[in-house]
Amino acid sequence: MEELKIVTLLREGSLYLGVLTAIIATITFHKYKNSFLKYILYFLWYVAINEFIGLIVKTYSEDRHNSIVYNIYGIVSLVFFLSIYRHFIQKKKFKKYISFFIVSCVVLYIVSAFFIDYMKNILTIAYLYGSIALAISIVFYFIETLNSERILVISKDILFWISIGLFIFQMGIIPFMIIREYYIEFVLLELNIILLLYYVLIYVLNICYITGFIWGQKLLNE
Image (cartoon, rainbow, N blue to C red; front, top):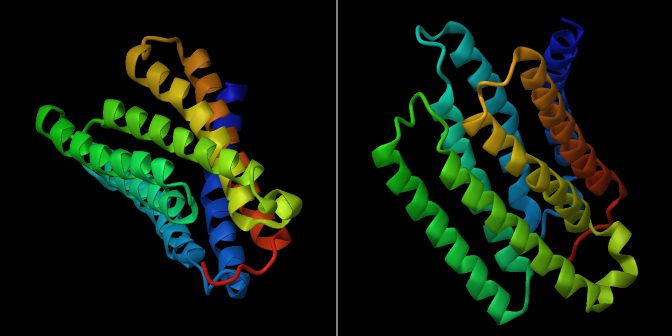
């Protein structure tokens, strides 16, 4: 089916796009190496490598299950980005909310792992909660930025572009995860359309990352 071919091409392309994003983040590292955002370089290389690991596990493992790879990625990515926003946001009330999100995400992942076979199944409820928590944290960042002098140079802010990409991705991944978990009985064509939208979100996310690294100005010590 044509849709299946497109999904396959997008999936394969997303693997190399992730590597490209990590390479550009490496080349432009001098722009943010003195800020807390420097840790995103290691995270992006982890993501790029993790995608290839997930593909290898699914292709060559006996039961073709790679859920454990993405369950680990889920908690790592959520805690990482929540920590990023907790650091950059100044308002104490927002910081307290994000601290709560971090702790509750970790607890929910651990509890979910006791009731769900995390080797064969994605911990959907935990990931959905984390996605909502991250989206709220990004909104906190937008609110604070709009009410500060940073708004004057917002288009040159690397974290702003990262936040745009993340917010769009989270708003799209939430319904995707719900449909994937609870409406798996969809016919193949509909599933392919859903996967198509998922990979489009990944492309948008990485394009926003790349735009931020290339277009963004050098960050001071933060």
